[in-house]
Each structure stands twice: as C-alpha cells, then as structure tokens.
Length: 220
Image 1 (cartoon, rainbow, N blue to C red):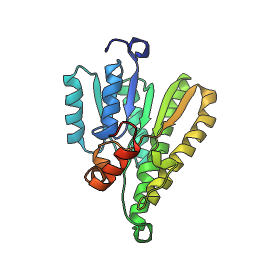
Image 2: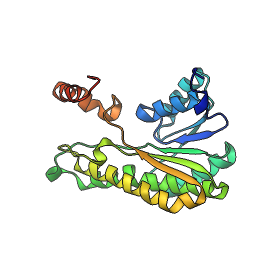
Image 3: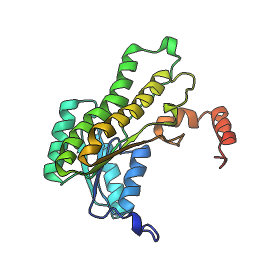
Image 4: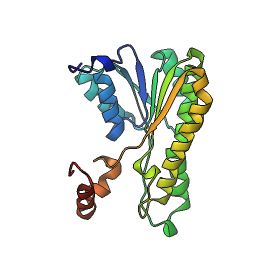
C-alpha cells in the first residue's frame, strides 16, 4: 500500500465493480485493490474480463471474475448469489456499467433508447437490489453508483444518455431512503470526461478536446 493511504485501508473488504474490464471501472478496481480490497470484476466478455484480471493479479491484487449481463435481472441475482457463496460477502458495490450513443434526438433510434435505459438505469436496480438483499441481512454495506456530469448538464446528441444519468442520481436517493435504515451507505459520483473507450469519439475530436481543455483549470 502506498505511504499515506493506510487510513483508507480496505484490507479484508470485497468490492464488486460492474463493467470493470476497461475504462473507469478498471481504474476503480485497480485503485481499490491498491488499498487492500479483494476485487470482483464484472463484464459480459469473458476474454476481456480474464485479461483485466490477469493485469491486476500481476500487480498483486486478489481478483475474482464474474461474467454476467447487468441488464438481465435473473442473471444478476443468480450471479450475485453465487459470488456471495463462492467468494464471500460483497462489502462494496460500484454500479459502473454503462453505455453511450450519440445521435440528434429527432433521429434517435427507439431501440437504442431502450438499450440505454436497460444498460444505464435497469442495471443499477438489478445489481443494486441483488447485492443489497445480502447486505441488509448483515446490516452493513457500501454502494456507489456512477452517474455523470451529464446528470446536471446537457450536450447536443446525447439527450437519452443525459436522462439515464439523471435517473441514476434519483434512484440513488431512493436507495438511500430505503436502505439506510438497514445500515447501508449509498452514494453517487458524477465523473466528467475521461479518456476511455466510451469517450473515444470525443477524445478524437480536436475541436471538442480543445474546448474541454480551455474550460478545465488543469488544462487537460
């Protein structure tokens, strides 16, 4: 553990991060492992999941893999129940899985709109509920939902994404209201723009990158 992080030690804790084979989810898994947490990686692609797990293990992390589709409620419950029995209690859940699709709203494919709802909102309910049922029995647990800076903003071409991330914030409030009396702590964080596969189109857009750098104090 890096010097100075001892007070934030998660030694003995187990964290499940959805959508964690790449991007922000993988970075979160790496950060939690560096302060002692055992990690459960999640994704649909088993090959990508295994590669991510191997990378973390090479740095000394304790990692398990749990491949399931976060949009499938039954699969979420079955996988979470299996993980609790096979790996041990899940102390921390980070609902990170998400997707983006950029199209002017007047041309937005309704099937893609439904896919966004399932991936960005239903997944938080599906996995959150399955994990909370175990946490409630223990009277403790931490859940962090990944919202977005777009939860309180809007940009052209991403209205449905903005709607889903706004919903994540309000669902988080509801989770807190229902589950805090059982000892659970539920919060959401709203990241800005990171260089991840989800934002590849923006990163490769010089005009957008220049605009973002100018409005960011760090200049990057």
